Image (cartoon, rainbow, N blue to C red; front, side, top):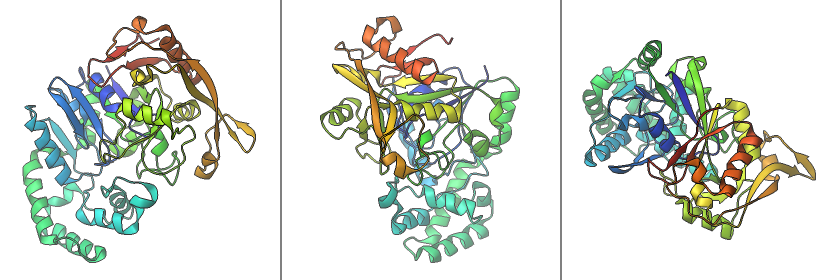
Length: 414
């Protein structure tokens, strides 16, 4: 019992949704603390596949409340559509609590993102999340708590329309927001107090991170990053609950590496291997549908993610995708301008010049899809897992062997 954080250890898309959904089987609360509708967490269970952008994955379990903290940017239209999709699958309405301090993504945010060219220059999801965080930092945003004041909402939208040069009807947006307020009035409140109360009562709480460590605004590959704190440190920033309350930090990494959008990627494979990983792993963005760039597992980046987050456990997902490869490469160091480098460079320009130093491991031919027993894995697959553990210094507690909720190996901690 207690608090667990699930944090992406790469550039996002690590299958965090699968791990969160698994951990929340016994949890009372699942908390999103960063990002917005730019996140895409996929859950596959007995009712089908659902792609979530704002609703916490754990809220799909009856009895687990989904909490959206103030660090999340809330797009009312996306949230309403997402809930409609959940109900259309025959699921019950998730138990939700939205922080009254959370900022709203509005039409002008998406318009500004397109006009500023950020989406093309950095490779964002075009969801308006970056401009919303900009307004938040500049102290000119609109929060859920502000929807109580219709006059303030109307003045805000009219001013935003002037700044954006039009492109949307302020009065229609005001109507939409007031309708959203009335529909969700019972679900908007003091999220910080609710989370703190659950922890005080000793209830199990899972904090669900969006994106990944290498996309963190400060610790990631700047400027090819997102606009929020994606590491474990984002919990305090995005909920108001001290990060020290978190007892377990699960870092989620694929058995290989992917990236969506622009930015350096030392282990990227543009040829046959990259295409194979994309095809076998279904590597297309859950939010945008864009094909992901694919390459070998980068342990330099993974060790750095551990240094930032202090992982207590690793979740190694999509191990089944590597089946059939005669040999598997893993980057253990970099070489930059002839010098061997063990650390992760702070400048994107230096990372772009990094050449991976590979360790070559033997692959396996056996199909391991759906295996749930660690000892049933081929010996080469077990050696791969042990190699990752030794290199990072963190036990691999969870191993994903397929997209389904049951396709997971859970190993004893310690």
